[in-house]
Image (cartoon, rainbow, N blue to C red; front, side, top):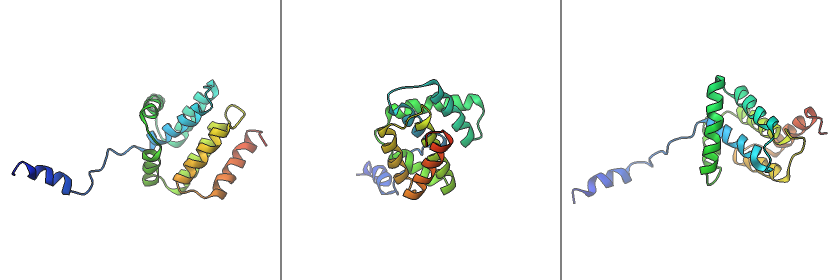
Length: 150
């Protein structure tokens, strides 16, 4: 029964932490999801993605392009958003989450229209990030006003 000892050790240890998703990757994935949500990829959305990633993280242009490409791949492999929102909840402050929420609304509004699916998705993500409804509405209104959509 000696062969069971290594297995017992593995299973008796606290849950082995899965490779944690970085805040950069999680942010990029959520932005890419909003970008793809309406079924159309507009050049201004791709440009905005790179701008927002640069705004959130201190990365050079090459790293931002790499991060954007990684986000597309991770999104294709993802089965849900919990791994991303869990990582963001662990790694971001409330102000950083609010900045992400603003970026999500900006991405949704980039083509001049917020699709119902985009709206639903952002509300779902805000809930998973434990953000208040009042914050969600306030930031959405700010983005819409600055985009001339209100």
